[in-house]
Length: 327
Image 1 (tube, rainbow, N blue to C red):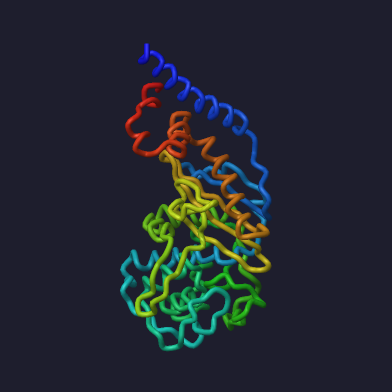
Image 2 (tube, helix red, strand yellow):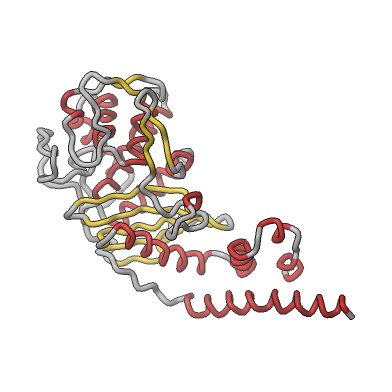
């Protein structure tokens, strides 16, 4: 009798989440999320398909998300053996005077390529980006020309254009750079997603860097924290399971921006959010996109597994095979 009662309780516990998952996704599938941002794009990385777009082809200031192209060029050159992670980079007067988010690097100071790259990727340091650009191309201007050539190679639209390595805009402190390039950096959300997809596919190790929550600069006793509040390891209110990248951005003109990526059940999504009104909003809107995307790409079994993992202690979950018995 007790055993029969136990199975009854277990059956109820199983059916409740199944009902919730089915109901939730019946409501969501085919219904686009309401996203408050200047532009957004959601891409299924596995297929390259755009699952959702709102002003996705409108050129907008991307702020530091343009550093995704800076990262790509540096990683390409390290991969082909032109440069190495352990090379020492001597900071120029030019790089030391870059404004915005920075490490306050001093002229003549030396750091490794790895330290500068991680500072740029995690902390979005502008002076680190410029120092790397000079080291890898001789000058920031020559590096930017490589960025635009790479954009053409990747067949990004002609709406996307880079004018510096950092994402700073004219009028930002320290942005008065003599690069012989006019205008402002502009990217579309669709191009940003395409660039992020290429970056991840070509250099999957970038996710090892972008998923870090903190790094230490040797010799400085300085710890730098990530600007990506969606990382699960932060265990904060904006954390999202499966998130492991990729790049935030902010300027007054651009607003708050985020290119995020998350993986669940073998399905990886890229979400680009341009121009929200607060730091928090860019992650709230990205969550909406991820929820919508995974409701379309994951199977019912995978969604049930995800539901239980979020609500049942891992030790208890691993000892139960309810879901496997259902499928």
